Length: 193
Picture 1 (tube, rainbow, N blue to C red):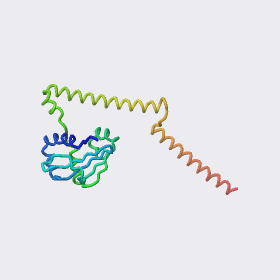
Picture 2: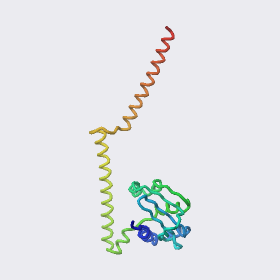
Picture 3: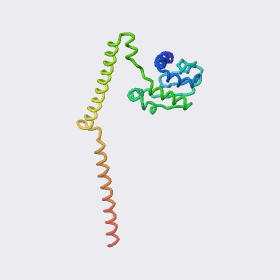
Picture 4: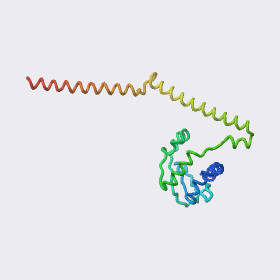
């Protein structure tokens, strides 16, 4: 298995180097170890005294463990604000809260990094193309979902619309109530005979 902690730490450290507020938030947790468990692999990272990350020693015990389902990664990437609703957290709550805050607010300025390599104009075009591609993929995904839903609701009915289920439930309740009233009338007629 390829150790992923060092490359991940390098990437995050690149982001942290640009944001002094983020490093100072992590400096409070210097020496602590965070383990991110993705079922298939895990990342163990330790906070250094300067607020940057480093790969934790293999025998280091985690102060906080963040467990993720691999299937939830696309949902997390799609909505970073609710990312921590998809995870299970064990350990130091204050440390986990700091990690959560950083995951929501630490942003990669890709255009700035690309401009150092390719120049401002090319970087702007690359970022705009990537955003456009992402939006196209997102729209195609939405269209596919809508088309599949329509197919399974209308053309090949395997699904039922919620409104139809509610109407069916209301009819069942009405028939049940009518049956109960009829049973009471019959019982009343039997008693009077």
